[in-house]
Length: 143
Image (cartoon, helix red, strand yellow):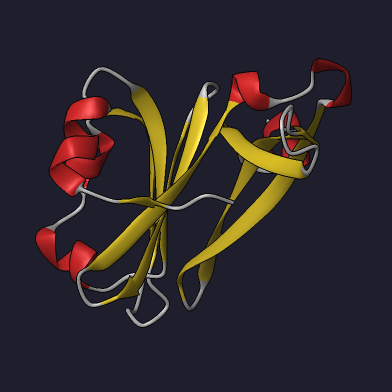
């Protein structure tokens, strides 16, 4: 996996015309997981304090997934997966359930569609988040 230097303003400019999903994870904050679905300018939805300390930030849509990491104070890097990097006949699509506790009594469930396959160059397996599909299947089907 190759890490590139993360520049918030540069990435905001690069993504300004893209609609994507954003998942922000900070395990040290109460309610430290934020999910924004199908948003334009998604990085603008995070506050300056969100960028001061976090575990990971995922930005993704059907074309790409960028994962931003904080390695230390003022040391931010990101990795990137693009849909055209997959060997076509190795592509597999999966759904995974993500359960987030919003308060002690309730939880919210989202289904996440992911693409798994082999990288054309490295031949290593890689994963790309694609989109949120909503809650649990049986919950939606019973309505």
